[in-house]
Length: 133
Image (cartoon, rainbow, N blue to C red; front, side):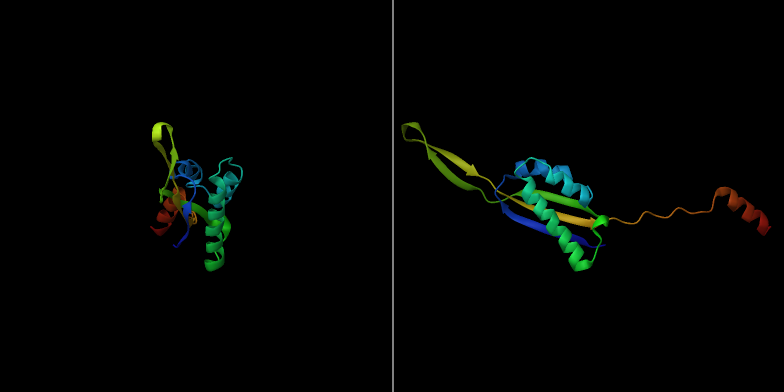
């Protein structure tokens, strides 16, 4: 079973804020994830939506996997480089500003088909055993 990945590097949103949206779509089917991200009123939702669509395109175009069978297997938001700025404060001091960014990785996986239930009922097994005797 193949995994389909897409990565986003140096998103200009902190990893902590990105994780709030990432947790909404973890484990969901791709259609549910796209719907959730479309209507989530967060700045982090738009780059994530684009990233999930990119991973779906990787799966559909490269391997020919139907979109209905895909789900978000793993999605992580890790810290990236922090840009350090300063703003000057009172009495000659300065106040540091940290502009944090994040790296996001999405892994999609194809759902396995549900195992087929055996059609032999216990009563049918007993009657087959009696017929053999």
